[in-house]
Amino acid sequence: MKGEIKEVLSSGQLARLIPTVADSKKEERATSSLLAAFMVVPEFTREVLGAAGAPTGKKIDTICYTEVCFKTTDRNKNCRPDGLIVISSHGKKWSALIESKVGNAELKKEQIEEYLDLAKDHGINAVITISNQFAIAPSHHPIKITKQKLKAVELFHFSWLALKSSAVIITDNKKIDDPEQAYILSELVRYLDHDSSGVSSLTKMSNDWKEVYASIQEQAVLGKSSSIVENSVISWHQLIRHLALELSIKIGQPVTLSLSKNRLKDADTNFGEDCLQLVEKNSLEADFEVPNAAAKIHFHADFLRRTINFSMKLDAPKDKMRATASINWLTRQLRDKEQLSTVTLRAYWPRRTPMTSAPLLSVIESPEVLLPVGISDLPSHIEVARVVDLMAKFKGVRNFVEECSSHLPQFYHDVGQHLSKWVAKAPQVKEKASDQIAVPTFLSGAEDIVEVQGSDELGKLS
Image (cartoon, rainbow, N blue to C red; front, top):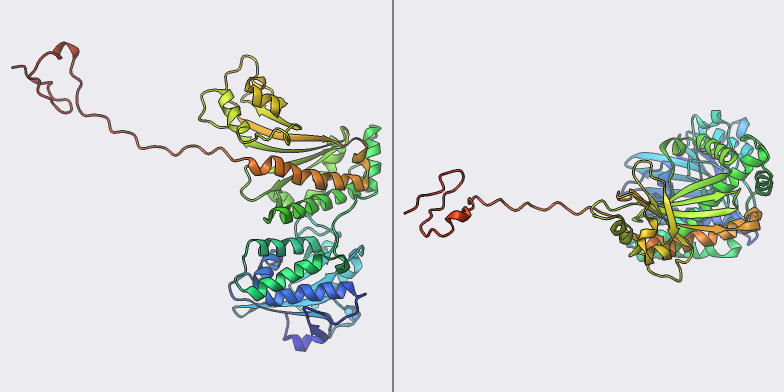
């Protein structure tokens, strides 16, 4: 940031934990409380803003302002960001402008681009937007911004739910030693939980979701660049991020979306590949990564069959003599028959042997039902899956969100939290071979045999 704060700001006030603004100004209240928490709780600041390039060292000094006005040039004289964050660490400064929305208010491209220009003029590192909209990763923005604007200033986005999730995980895992800081963060969570804060979760898909569903059911040809496909994929990205955050809050650990390096690096690539999959395969899919879980949770939405599928695929044990022993290794981990009546087991085999599947309860009773005829190989992988037929609910913009929000945590509860990876046994020290030479049986009656070590003579008889 160019110059000291007093030199570049014409107005602005320090963020307050309990802001003295009208109750109707929900946006200002939420923003001020959040920024105040950043100033007081360094662990929270590192956890959130580290993803936006902020310093994460042991010693950071954070100062935040709200309703800031800059001494600006004519092109951005009307800009008034909701906040400004400045973090100092070891003599270096990092800064970011904040633009926030609450309730149903959505971010606007023109306003964001104005703030990017403002940040560039004043040497500010980043612009951070906050709203009830979701993004797969902080670097993937829900609004398509002109790339030219992003050459000098970075752009990041956080949903309010993502911020609440981070605060919940930090408090649940007792990462803060200072009791006052822990209290302040818990109060922020309590505030963001309240309806009056204007913070909300995802409640429905785009209206274009219905049109895409109808087109696929009628076997119509869809274009990957059509507005209904693009809007449906945007909704899908919002949904899977929402699901990851909700599961994070439930288990008290950060659940992330697993993306390839290319997808994570380039939001356009990620978006384009999902649009292509929707038109070519009539489906969308995502992988959730849960800390220390046995495998990723794969989520697959099939428009043609009107189903949502959740599955976890594990490496099968390699130290078994029989395929049934490999299968039993997994089924022993899942024994609650009441909750597992809708779970299927799939076995994958080496070479060209087709995958086999059967209901989990049937496999528990008789693991042989998964064995291919005439095959003696061990399975390479074993997958646990639950397929939910939504029928007409699949096209419902609210029903689809409700069903997915219910079934993902239920699958993790019934299956995911009980599974463990197969781990090969550690190699053991081999017993040292005896240096004695065995006595031939025809000499077993001799009484005066002299033991000879190594390859020496056997001995002499008396």
